[in-house]
Image (cartoon, rainbow, N blue to C red; front, side, top):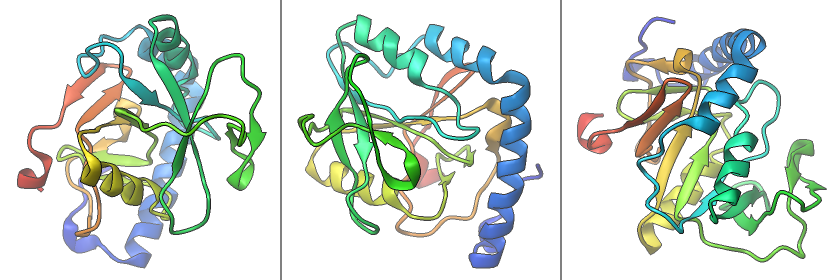
Length: 202
């Protein structure tokens, strides 16, 4: 996919980008999904120092599967969490999740912890995406849940946002708006890469 430009922003432009990105990700997921998930589970994770609460996600469709990575983190003693959608336009709630816990069915049928699981504040957030640029801006599904949630978490204190993507999902520049929250790291099947001062580079 060629590099896009901030001037391409707008509902029609983003809709076209999302459709193209979905097709691109589906093709790569079909060919490399299993090996990429294994590579993530074995990757060096320099953004973790030990003891962090890590919020992942329950993968849907062609999203890169982070569950093998989360199982590894559970064995290392990390507290894990999954996001829960409360309502459209509201921040995500993060509830503790253990590999043996049953999941309920949440927004759009996505598996999420039940109300019996305690809410936790993540130190590290693993973020799914359709595309991401080298300044850390991501193209998501358009609902804005992660931008709203990251803004709230960052207002409270430190949090590390890690975009989870196939290397083929990385582009040079994406359209973004003032409310878009940049990522701090990218984690692909090729390894973890820090984003250097994403706000300044945008």
